[in-house]
Image (tube, rainbow, N blue to C red):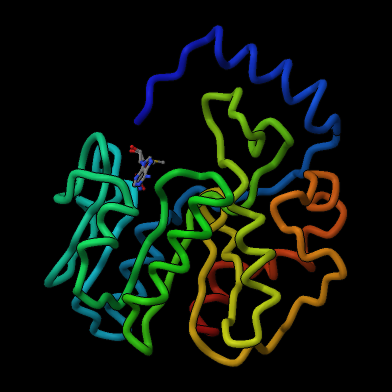
Length: 226
Ligand SMILES: C[S@@+](CC[C@H](N)C(=O)[O-])C[C@H]1O[C@@H](n2cnc3c(N)ncnc32)[C@H](O)[C@@H]1O
């Protein structure tokens, strides 16, 4: 992972306060302590006897090492996984198809959206795309540029974008900072928004429309929906 410099974090905080958004309310989201992203990923793999897994952003392999499957590819420019490079570099040379793709790389709207678009091109028809860190609790958790150690980025805006697409079913599982689940299928709960400039959505918009935007489900519900 990139090194976080305290002076830069402070500068980013000031920048966000004066030039991006000021909003002080926080969401009180309770995530179950005993269910993590790898539990959901492994459940999907085992339920459908999937064989091919891709993880974008591996860090110290905390998740990647736990996944049991026939073939797995982990992409990270700095550490972990088994492909050294960015997700863009990986997709530019890739010709394999995957059943489950877990996107957990650069948590910025543009890059995360690009990772989803690229993943859709290499997803088997019955496969799933999962995205980590979809449910930030506060403006600091989602601020770009980043000014907090524990941070989710603005991945939530990608979920809002995908929720407006007719050919994708997108839900958010309320575990482990929020795991988005995307399947190529008719959208059964289409989100209609007047504003399609997703990148410019504010944390205030998310705070006020959180359930509608994110299509949130508890873990047990998700297991039934899959
Ligand atoms: C939050 S960590 C991943 C954690 C891991 N998936 C887990 O579940 O434990 C994010 C990782 O994304 C990597 N990363 C940053 N930019 C990336 C990019 N453009 N493509 C792929 N990975 C990237 C970072 O090096 C970092 O290791």
